[in-house]
Structure formats: structure tokens, C-alpha cells
Length: 323
Image 1 (cartoon, helix red, strand yellow):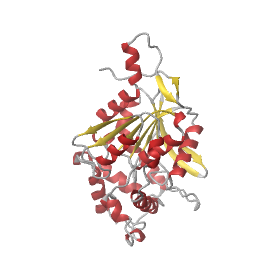
Image 2: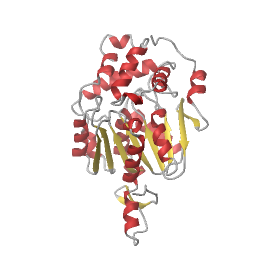
Image 3: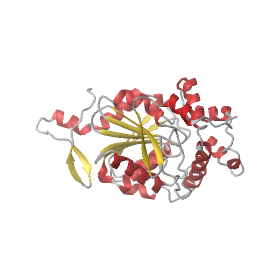
Image 4: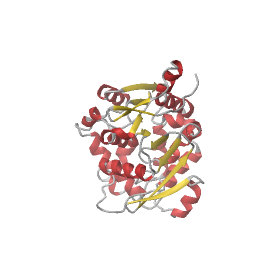
């Protein structure tokens, strides 16, 4: 029935590995991993998820990038910020947390990818700190008014939101998981077990519901996407054509309002392209990031790669997949 609490050490033994590290940010212990070498690439997961959602991308990209991923505050092994004044569901909180995290790692500039709610925090970060990003990928990102995803709406429905912090039955969690994927074969027993285990970390159920309630208010706010036009970082939009959580109309709004954007729509894919088609989606992201290198390879006189930096060009070299 999803009423129990699993000891942290038990979860850590199961869901950490030799790449796992921890960072204290204002009293919150953040679980993260750094794998590979190359230009830094930061990956932000979505609501009720964890850094494990990027496993497929890490396998594909760690030979090209220094891949950095974290359990966002309120989720995964990081869990909630227990400071009552933190307002950790707030975009400003998350933006400043990301900024502190990346500064502590010594990242002056990096690539950024965000999925779902992580995409919302990604573009808010890009709006405030454009000079710190080379390019960005928004994958099925929150950003405009829409209908609340059904299962998240149910868990945050007035009346229900008093119950769900204490009880989230496994069968309802599984229903929610399946609704995020178009290809049911991707929803393995291991995936279902991970999602259920993480909500049994102390404080996570209540944190999930607070995020769900905040999202309910967000997606009803007609001014939600007003800041998108302030994002000048070159952006690739990735969307599953069968995404039932964030409809493809939201992608069209992003493309309309972002000054520098392009998009890819994947037929037969749901809300999590990085899990359903990790090889293709990772390759597409890499080709977008390294498009300038392809131009240099085609024109030998071009010896440096140009990426956006505070409305000026800075130079950075990388590598792209061979065609």
C-alpha cells in the first residue's frame, strides 16, 4: 500500500554505485554522479523520478562528455529539504541550487538537458544564467498552461492530497508509471521497483505531493510561459508524439517563443525518450551540441567551435558522432 518507510542505508546500498558522490548544499545532502570525460553535460530528471532515468544516455555519451546527473531536491536519494522556509518546489530555489551545485563543481560553462519538471527548471536556469550554458535540450518540458497529467492530478486532488503523503499503493504507482511510457516493454520490473522504492524514502511521498500541488497551480497559471521569450540559449526540443503527460502543443509553444530553437518529434514514443529510445535520442542531442564541429570538419579553415556566451562567441572544441 506504499505506507512504509525504507531505511536510507538500505536504499543507498541498492541505488548507489562507485560513481555516486554527495554534496552538502545549505544543509541538504545531494546525491549525484559524474561519469566520463569531455565537455560537461548536466542532466536534470523529471517529477517523481531520479538520476537513474538517464542510465541509457550515460552509456551512450560518457565517451564524449563529462556526464553529471543528480537526484533533484525532493526526489531520489537526495530527498526533501527539511528547512520549512526553503520552498524547495519553487523554480527560484531550484535555479539557485543548480547554480550552487555547478559552481561547487567548478563548471564555468556546460551543456544542460532537462526532462519534464527538470526541463522547467532548466529553462528557468537558462533565463537567469545564459552565459553559463553552451546549448540546452528541453525534453517533454513543462512550460505552459495545460491539463494536469491524470495520475499526478489524482494524487494532488483536494482531499486526496491529505492521504497520498502517507499512502501511495503500488498498483496506482504502476498505473502512473505506465502512463509515462508508450512502449510498455521498457517498464521492466526493475523500473517499477525503483520508482516504488524511491517514494518510500523518508519524506519523499510528502515531497512528491507538494510538487504535484505546485504543478497543479503552475499549469493553471496563464502567465506560466512568459519568461520563455527571455531564453536566448540555443535549444533543441525533443518530444514523444504520444506523450500523455506534456502534450505536443506545449512543444509548439516553446518553438514559437524561443528565439533560437529547433525540434525533433519521435513517433511511437511517450514522455521519456531518453529511456524509450536512448540510443537515438542521445545521438540526436550530441549532434545538436556538436553541430558547429561538423561545420568545422566540412570547412578546414574553421578551426574553432562557436557556442553562445553572453551574446558573444566563446570557443570550445568537442566531437560529434560520425555520419
